[in-house]
Length: 556
Ligand code: F6P
Image 1 (cartoon, rainbow, N blue to C red):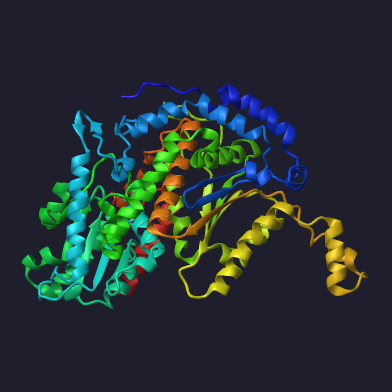
Image 2: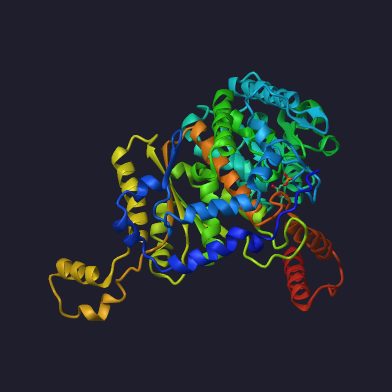
């Protein structure tokens, strides 16, 4: 058990130095920084394999990064990094190790948890996933009427859905030619119904993915799936060929009626939002095959090595994390945008919302003391190009500063190169506009040269000025492949980890999701009562009673 205690974030020696530094540079415009140092981009960019991070469009000087790195050292980042990779129980509220990195560990070295080498078990499950997936992919795995599988439905939610779904979309060019994958997460019956109505039970395979196998939404959907299937199959014995489970909870899987032979195991040291590398990635292996899944793991492992060995000043996840802390805690920004310029990465923002906010959305530190500083930002985003025609107005001319990551693929998988050129130019132009802005003189000149008129300009000009000085990171991916995707996702995982260390948080529990779950059970039972509900606050009572009356009226 790790006993090392961190000082509170605001008491770290480098914190005060950063406060002073902030006061000195907070009003500097990045335009000026670029004009003083035309080589700024060389100083503030990093390359790791096929990922290039350009962080020069940030409100930093050559003094900022050394001070931020000092902050990381003051927060004992080296110690915590080592503790995580070596399997110490750094998830102190659940008394668990945090070892998603072991799932992509390609070395032949043992990794001990509680006196046991966990690597052989990991390899066994990976082999089992690969053998099973190959059978499904080749058609050797047959349904109860002897037909091959055509459709695979992953039933899961949160980490048991977002990761596999996002990777499945991202790796579309690597998909099996004819197998179709579907992801059901929402307990709204419309979600599963919309998918099932198109499918044939004889050729459909269900993967019930749930770490705990107690999640209400997932189990409820799994029961709907089983009923739908049994209406046609009739015999319980047919379930074997159509339902598999991914879980840490063997007893609950058995209780649901899934054969343990069809269970793919993982372990409590894999957090839900860090689980796509584990058996939770089964749907990914089925979709893209074992070789591509191994490439995904390899890319992540390469980023793990980079994170463990590169000096902080040259360490991509550390730099991205520190920049986030710089804005969150000194500029007091509230949110962080994720804008992919690659349609295949369209679900990345949603995936990162869970990864980041479930990890660092905490208001007590590792020792349970209330923090007096902002922790995890609101992470949000969508496809950048669509965002340009929706909310970018606020980024450019609103009153809030929103640091953002622009994630751009350079080589496209599509056949439409000119479309890709348009997308790339938009991404880069946006970061330029956010940085430079357009001052009043430039605005005047632009209007006059575009309209050939100078009269009436004064009325509009202030609406057309851009202050600029909005920070962005640009992450260029050479080509979106399983390997580069693996590196990209591990990059964000470690960024989140570093921020958690600096804020002295346990980034690996998620107690904040429990209260709502507990109350939902109570409300569900209230809905079925015959009497009016009075046990909640007036608002909740009213909503529940109105709902009860409405559904009762509609069924009578
Ligand atoms: O409610 C939050 C959560 O526990 C997430 O952390 C997790 O990814 C998700 O629910 C799903 O949990 P499970 O895999 O146990 O069904």
